[in-house]
Length: 97
Length: 240
Image (tube, rainbow over all chains, first blue to last red; front, side):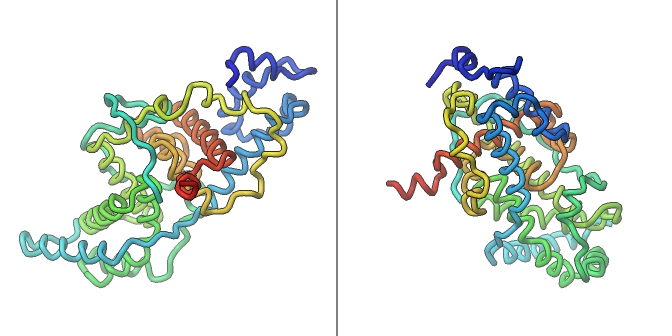
C-alpha cells in the first residue's frame, strides 16, 4: 500500500492543476450537483479518475434497478393474524381513526 | 443474504461517520410524515388497482381488506427490511411489526401521499427504531478497513481494464450491498435503492445532509472495492 501523500504526488496529472486526491475529495458534491462530470477538466486527462467516476455512476444506476424481489415466509402473516386476534381479544382494538 | 461484518460496539451519538450509524434516540422514529418525496421514489410507487378500495375497507376494520394490503405490499416492505438489516430473521420480525403498526395507524392515512410511500416510510421508521434499541449499527469501519483502503482509487493502477460497467449482475450487487458496513448500507439503500433524498435521510437518521452525502459516497466507493476485488461474502464462502 502506498502512503496517501506520496501517492497523490504520483497521481498528479500533467496539464491539470488538480490532483486525483483533490478531485476525489470534490466527488460527493459533484455527484449531487447533477453536473456533467465528463466536462470536468481533470477527467479529460486522468484515466483512473474517469474509470472511478464511470464505476460509481454505474453502481448508482444498477442500484435503482434492485427491485423488491424477496418475499417473507408465510409465518409472517400467520404471526400478524395471531397478534391481531390477541389484541382484539384483549382490548377489542380496531384501526386508529 | 449474509449479515454484514459486526465489530465492537461504540457509544451512541447522533451522527453518521465512517460507516457508523448512530440512530435517533428511542421513541423518535415513529412519526410518519405524509408528504410526497422524490420523483424516483414516486416512480417506485405506481398506483395499484384496487388499493384505494382496500385501504378504505381496512380503515373501516375489514380484516380481509387488510390482508389484501398485506399481499400487495409485503414484498416491498420485506425487501426493504432485509436490505437495511441484512438478516432474514430480523427482517421478518420487522415486517411483522411494520404491518402491525400499519393496522393500528391506517386510520390516520389521509391520502396526501401515495399509500405505498406512506407505508414505506412507516417501515423505515420501524427499522430505525429497532436499530436504535439494539445499537448494533455502531460498527466502526476502522475495524474493517485499513485507513489507506478508504482512499480507494488513489492507490489504484491500471484502473481502465478493471472498470465495472456492464459486469455486475443483480445478485452480485445484492451480495455486495449486504456486505457493506451497516452505516454505509443504510444510507446506500435509502438513497440509491429506495430513492430518498439526502434531506430526507438526514431527517430520518438525525445527521447532517453533508454527512449523508459523504456516507453515500463512501458506501459507493466501498461497493466498488467489493465488486472489483470479488470480496463479497458469497465469493469468500465459495473459496473455503
